[in-house]
Image (tube, rainbow, N blue to C red; front, side, top):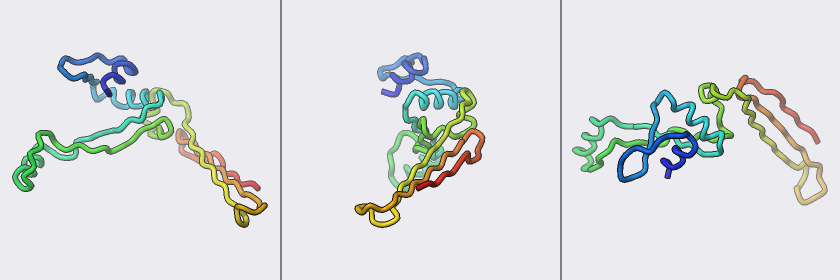
Length: 135
């Protein structure tokens, strides 16, 4: 179903064949990953992890009859993980990551004081904006 997403969200064209498929040049990779992530899609980046020669050795040594080289997920990109400067080149608004924590001075079931911690990080400028702890 990924081909349908590519056609709908990235304005790609279907390629000929029995199964729906589409593609784009590698130079458009970062731009398209960013577009999909900003639209709420989780993008899995898959890369080839063996050469055709290694696949042939695998055939001989392990008796494997794979017809394609092995590929593995090497990255997951979402709207919340757009932190790479290259991925942010098309739309350089600063992405923030915020972490919240809560803990109790005593046992949580009693009327103990709660302690909250907040940390906000600006990934665009690569420095911490603030870290605040309060009661």
